[in-house]
Length: 125
Figure 1 (tube, one colour):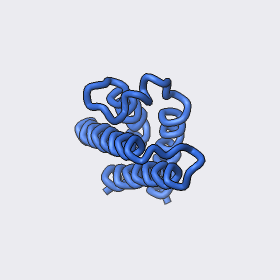
Figure 2 (cartoon, rainbow, N blue to C red):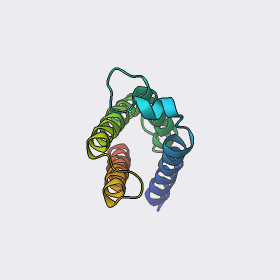
Figure 3 (cartoon, rainbow, N blue to C red):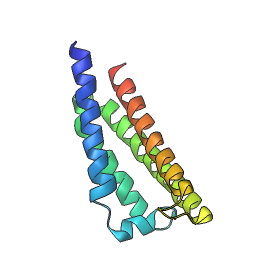
């Protein structure tokens, strides 16, 4: 039962972090920085996600080295997922009124959620 509570608490932390980092704390300069390795916006965004992951991982009561490795993995994966979506979005030129846009948005969010599932599994295994 205790592991189930820890899992749910970790997932809740990651969901809250994701909402704020992806939907509340993204000014235009961060959005413009995704999809271009030379611009800092995507790195700042992925870094915010990575830092926000720390409290969730701390709930698993794992060591700081393991937390650091998982946070680094979150940073790299989040950056690459967003980078790929930005490149695909530019290529497709889809706006929020098209199915293509929502399919890309949904795929992006699915990949982030699967990343969180993997993080939780790695922390609790």
